[in-house]
Amino acid sequence: MLSDFLLNLIVKNHRVSKLCSRIADFIFPKSTKTYRVLTGPGRNLKFRLNARDQTAVLFGTYEHTNVLFLLKHISERTIFWDIGAYIGYFTCIMSRRLVKGSVISVEPLPQNIALLRQHIQLNNLKNVIIVEKALSSSQGSASFLMPESSQEGRLVDNLESLQEKMISVSVTTIDTLVESGVPIPDILKIDAEGEEGRILKGARAVLERQRPSFLIEIHNLESARICWDILSCCLYQIKFLEGVFLRKAEKVENIEGRHIWAEPVK
Image (cartoon, rainbow, N blue to C red; front, side, top):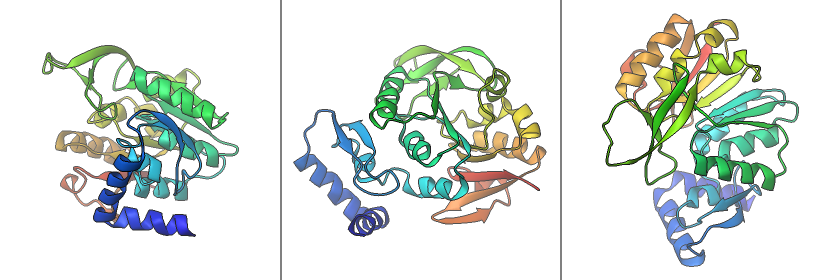
C-alpha cells in the first residue's frame, strides 16, 4: 500500500523525514486542530495536534519501531500499562488492538492528561483506565519539572531547577496500584525521563509474583545500573533494541541510552 511505502520511507530516511516536517510547516496552520494519523499502526486515529510541531504523530512515525515491537508481543487479552503516556499515542494504538484486554495509561502532567482524555473520547475507546499520578519507588507527592516540551517532564527531588516551572504531583508505585485493584500488567512500557530505576524499585512485588514483561527507555547510566540490578535479581533476561533487532545485554553499559526488553526467565 502507498501509505506503508510512505511510512517506511519516512522512518528509514532522515532527509525524507526532515522534508515531511518542512512540508508540514508549509501546509498546516500553527494552531492545534484535530487530525487523523496518515500512516502506520495508528492510521486513522484522531489526535489534537499542532501539525508543525508534532509531525511524527501526524505521519505515524512517532516511536515507530517501539510501537511495532510491542504490537508483536501483545494479544487481544493483554493488560498493557503505558507509563509516561504523554498524549496517548501508544495508549490509543494498543487500546484499538486489545479487543478483550485493557490499557492502564499513567501520566502526571495535567496538560497531557487533558489531551489524553480528549483522544480517548475522539477515538471512542472504552478499555482505557487513566492514572493521574507519577510513578516512583514510594507514595506521596513530589515536585514535577515542567519543561518547554510536555513530553519531557520529570520528577525532581532537590532544588536543582528553581528557575524552571514546577508543580506538585501525586506519586505512587506499581505495587500500590496493583494492590488497590488496578488490573495486573502483562506488559509495561516505561518512558519516565530517568525515573525508570525508581519505578522498578516500586514494583518488586509485581516483578516477583506476576512476572510481566517490560519495554523501558533507559535515560542514563545511574538508571541503567538500578534497572540492571533489580531485573537481574528478579531473574529477568535483559535485551536491548538495535533498530528492529534484539541483542542480549552482556553488561550494564550495553543498555545506557537504549530501549530494553526485559522478560522473565522461564
